[in-house]
Image (tube, rainbow, N blue to C red):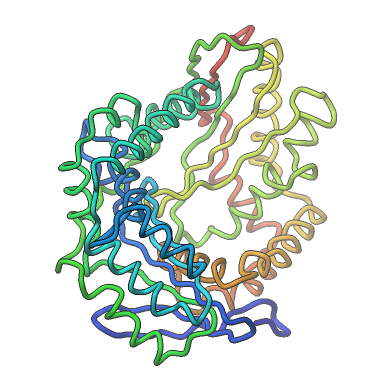
Length: 419
């Protein structure tokens, strides 16, 4: 999986039953992981039914066909099969990890879960109550309130601006019919992205794909509304009675397929993503002791990256923390990185890449992320060379293009002083 040019994976394309899958075959251990997704997720939740996709995903492993929830859970446990489904802002995902002898049973149970979900009243009530409790807990913290307000302000007329896991009000009102409708529009035979890794050959995967997905209804999920431009909203304060404020700050980023993508990653690593070595951590924590930690990254939604950062600090220190953050934002935009910072960031991004693919589940999930972002087959193999080819001028130009203190939008949840 590695060579003189750095880390790569031997990815093969397998097609069967109208489904195309990426495979990394590795027989070092007798384990197989398969991951798949459809575009949609919370983006397909109707107004007033926010969170229905997340609840529907959770219910897929709560009984299927003739097997109620307990029997289904026992069948998974008896064979040590890990099966899960989830819904994010823009994707609905499923996957399993299993020992090789249990692969047929893993395929059978996963196919049954998708094709014949039971949605028993007891399971619906239990999963819905858990989701309501989680939604309420999220709003009990300054961070939860800041996050909800930030995305609502940035994308007020788009699903990205709504809580992807729903609100206590929308979740409490969900009925089984709405959950079944969500699965009906989402879990389809077409529009699938599939990846696999581990002790499985191309022929075995080709035989597996029809068994896994043939029972699904024909057609693809509805199209997802493209992400509009990030709406600058300045500074918002959400009053929360707490000794500390939670701050989210951000601005428009760039498309996942933008030619400056890796230059932007290097720049963000230096500015805000490099742990104690980042400029923000040095200025905010090490030099001034304003906060325990601060960071920012490229958050990809709908194949567009939004630059999002966060920090928590005492109410009396919020104003100074934001001032220092804007100073560092402006300094990076004006000066770019130093040669030493460039070398360290490129070395880290190159050297840490294998850690993202350290077992079959991570390989399958990592391949799925590549497919979701429309990466070509050779994207991983070429990444070390692309990073090495980045000059300081290229990263400085990306910083100048993307960063502007005046563009930063800020939500503060707490009782900040001086704002």
